[in-house]
Length: 80
Image (tube, rainbow, N blue to C red; front, side):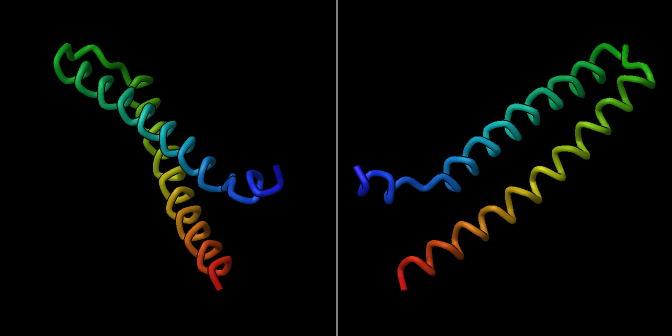
């Protein structure tokens, strides 16, 4: 049992979950932007919501980058 816990990398799974959330949000934003351009029905509130979502995605992307670097750093330390 202890070997199974030792082999579990919680940071890697957290990284994958956040990555999946970012991809899902990016797809939602992309669909919204396409709908706005095709139908031309977006209000200023819709535009503001898209901007805020994109800012959140940028923040999460930076967090993913930092997490990836941290996971790689920890993996190298464990190998030594």
